[in-house]
Image (tube, rainbow, N blue to C red; front, side, top):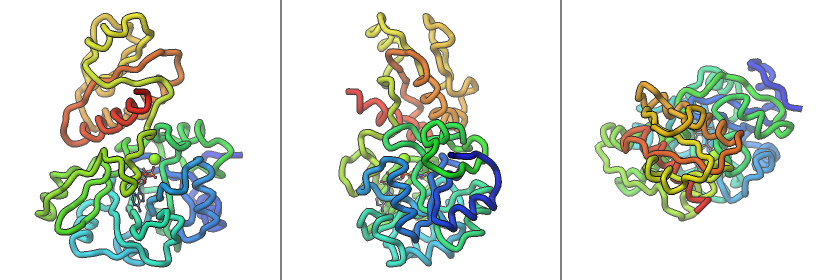
Length: 319
Ligand code: TXA
Ligand code: MG
């Protein structure tokens, strides 16, 4: 049985017994377990049906704690101090205390300090880091509310710590400092421009490659059950006239569509609000009998880029 609540002491007790707890972060909810305990880590992979070659991010409360589990070079430290706590993950050489299972055998570990106050308090009360992938069954859209977690993982997690809807709404930026450059592995709220401004180093985007060095880029990620196409809404509507269609747009409404078929992510054209709503809307549409989802490309900057990246990944599986 899964219960939902706001009690930190329940979360602390379960995690200390190497059980699983879903935790709120500012990006998406995570499915957390003791990162130093192999049996807890095995439970995470199995609750999600996640292949064990896809490594997990560890979550800690402070930059000092990062150094207990990974080697923090000066540039990475600069990035950590600028963007943590926040929607930002660093890939770092791991220390041996982190089980190979967490990193799927890689010598590098992904580390992040979430900024959700409840989860930060939780991490401060634990004497181990939390391994936590997004709290969804493998391949589905990440959860941004406690209800989303329950929908996907009921009976597969003991407790869901309810911290309300996630503030950012898309997963963290993943970056790595390598050979005088910053490799951007996953697009998120922290942008290449911001990382360049802090470090003076060029940012090289590795997003979208299929290499297993960046398994976050696997095709089956973020997919709705209903096929999703990304492109110009009026053109695609015309091409699929006979179908029962839902649209996802930024702030514009389109003529010729019934209102219940149009999902506008931010009527006031605020990209932060659009990102907050994206996954909830994708999940919501999936509950109805639409044949097809048509989404338009979002502005190609900041969080708009991260939204486009998730939409592209959601569509590719159906092609
Ligand atoms: O915002 C987030 O990062 C959320 C919250 C819960 O913290 N977590 C999250 O975890 O999105 P997950 O597991 O769904 O995505 C993490 C991605 C995965 O695609 C994984 O392949 C990649 O990060 N990753 C983790 N550790 C890695 C490593 N050692 N080397 C390369 N990629 C890694
Ligand atoms: Mg995920």
